[in-house]
Picture 1 (cartoon, rainbow, N blue to C red):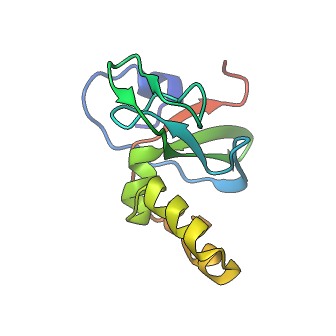
Picture 2: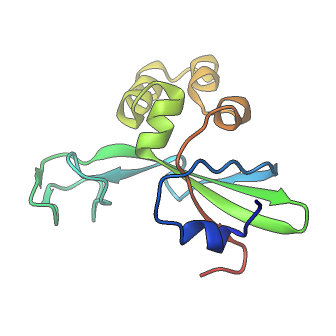
Length: 138
């Protein structure tokens, strides 16, 4: 039985949901495909260049890169925003954001960069838990 996304989100038991849609665009934050965060939890660091104590209690000397990739898709008349967070991206790409970031900094090569950047094919072919919202949802 087909149901709306809001109906699906109210279901309490574990279910697999597959959305078939056309990718409209990949969106990135001001840092690009990642943000700087806590070394223990996924909280965003207040300043990527300064040590701090996270709300989880972790004393963070150097915040680490964590993935955050937004993909906008269309399914007919409906448009949705999917957010791929750190654990999902690391599972899809087979490497942490910290490893990818450090590899890019070390190599500084356009060829190496192209090999490391997430592409449409490897994101579309993976089944992951995603957060989504309709284009008019808050």
